[in-house]
Structure formats: structure tokens, C-alpha cells
Image 1: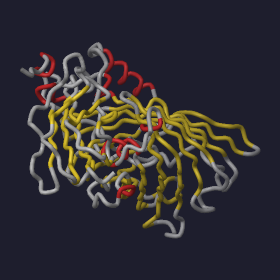
Image 2: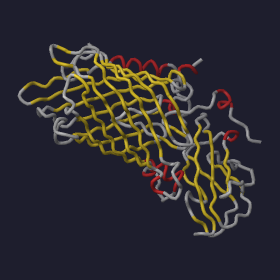
Image 3: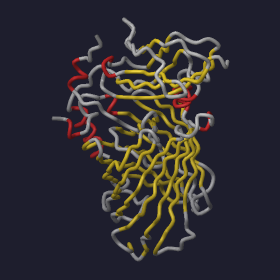
Image 4: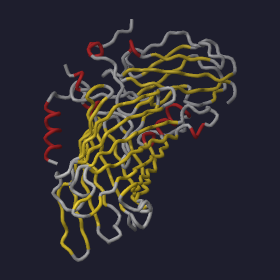
Length: 121
Length: 295
């Protein structure tokens, strides 16, 4: 036990903790994860649990044929460092796949995918 | 123009504890984790079910996991034990020191799969209490694995949050007997069956769970040990442990009931609680990094 405590104490002493940040989890999205919406959204917006590194965070949206239907303009809205947004082309009825890959400001990467449906709600 | 922060330019991007693609695997309590990590269980407290001889064992355990390189790591653990038996004074003290060398065999993100090779060593002559295994060193090679089911067809909506992790290993004591009592070689195996609410919410369907409920992972762990030499094979012992883990940004809390799997293991029930910290998230610029990245 004493060895463990000494090891931990030595490890903690190596360096002070910076501002505490960690992996970004997807908190919620619009359209919601797995949802069906009656009308096509103009954009997909993702809210995360941690601030993001904009240069290493991206999102794409594809249709059932695997073709991109987003506008390629993923961005973090000013003043919202934990929010990732991308515009969409006009979407016909169908199922769409949102794929995101983000890096939190302490360099921890996370990724995920989900679908939403248009016109089937 | 999107620009990375100065901090992000200083460090390589890192994959840390328990991730395979979009799947997060929590640190389980009974079974070993199939990933190298920078984590510490501080503490894990368990009250074991009464043994067949009606004795009660209480453990207070600490485990430290540390990555040496991004794909190799070590685990160091020990425990304080107290044994109460009918008709005799209770005894207590340190258990045997445990160490483990680990190699991350693979991480398959798209298939949410992990594989890890490990060599556990339970060191002899390091325990002070006459409450645990024979006082000899034991070598235990293991294969640990994890598999999330997020890659099954999306039409199977509510099955996709399931995941399983497991351990397969052998125990080889370095002495065949201790004071005339045989030290058997064992086959050890265990599994954790998990249902991830975080995965359900992020990647399957937003059913409206919000904190803290969207961070819960109900699970059932089972682990068994079967002698393969120097003891009858029917002396299999094991426990079944249903419980729940809450996984936050920097730590997780878990609690499980301990149910003996057979009469040879014990009777009644016990319980275990664990507080577990993610050092790579708490100290991302120092001890939370692999040692090979400290310079």
C-alpha cells in the first residue's frame, strides 16, 4: 500500500494540472440523434460537453447513396466553442448519416455517427 | 479562418482510455480492462459474500494504470484486507502486491473492438496478512478483449448500445505446493456485459436522457476460476456481479452486488463500490500522457 501511495504522490508531483478539460462527448444535436423530422433542416448543429479545437473538428452529412449533402462549411459559431454547425443542401425525403470527428482543446479526439430521417416523421 | 490553439500544436493527438472508434468502454470492476490507460482506482471497497466456512473478507484496494508508450502499459495494485471468522480473532493487513505488463494488440475503431495481451504477476512474500492466497508468486498471462455492437445494422436500434468485454487467462504458481498444500494451475475467465446509455444517446437515438442518467452504464460482470492441475476440476469458483457505472469527464463511480456463482464460492451476497479517476483527462499535459511522451 505504501508503495502505491508513494507512486501516486510522485506522479502527481511531476506537474501541476492545467485547466481541467477532457474528451468531448456529444451532448445533443439538432436534428436530434435518431429522430424523424417532417421538414428538411437547413443545417445540422451539434453541442458537445467540452470546447473544441476548430482546426481538427469536422462534421459531414451523407445520403443513403453515400453522397455528401452538406455545404462543406463546418464551423464553430462565434462565442460557442462547444458547438459545431454545418449547412445542408435542400434535402428530399430520406435517411441521412451525420459523421462527426472532434478534438477537444486538450487534444483528446472523439468521433461518432448518427442518422436522422426527413419526411418520415 | 479556423486555427488550432497553441496548446493543440504542442501535443500529438491522443487516443486514451477505453475508446474504440465511437465506443467508450468504462473501466470495469471485476474483470480486467482491454486497454492500456492512465487511470487509478482510489479506492475500491468490497465486502465479499460469506465463504463456505462462514468467514467474511473485506478489501480496500488501489490500482494504478500507467501507459509507458501509447500501446504499452503497466498496472500496479495492492489491497488491505480484513478477515473475520467465527470463533477466532479477526486478522488484517496488506494483500499480495500485483503488477501487470500490458500490450495493446489492436484497436479496431470501425468495429469497436479491442484486444490486449497482459502478464499479471502476483508477488509472493509481499503480503502481511494470512488472509489470501498462498505466499508464492503467480504468473498469469491473459488476453483481454472488448467488442461494441454499434456496427450491427442500424435497424436493430436498441441492441447497438450493447458491448462485451472479457478476459481469458491462466494462473501458474511458481511453486507446486506450499507447506504440503498444492497450488493449482488455474484457467480464469470473465466477462462484462454492458449497455451504454452514453452510446444510445450519442449515436443511436436521443431518448431524452440528460445528465446524470445519460452517463450511466448498467452491466453484469461474471468471473470464474477453474483448476486445471493439482486440484479437482469441479472446484470452479466464481461470482456474478450486476451493477452500474456512472462515467463522467474525469472520473467514474461504480457499484455492484457480489453473488456467489456456486456453493464452493460462498453463500449470501456482498457488494463492491469503486471510485476511478481518468488521469489522462485530469492531467493531459503531464502524468496523463504516456511516459514516452514526457520529453
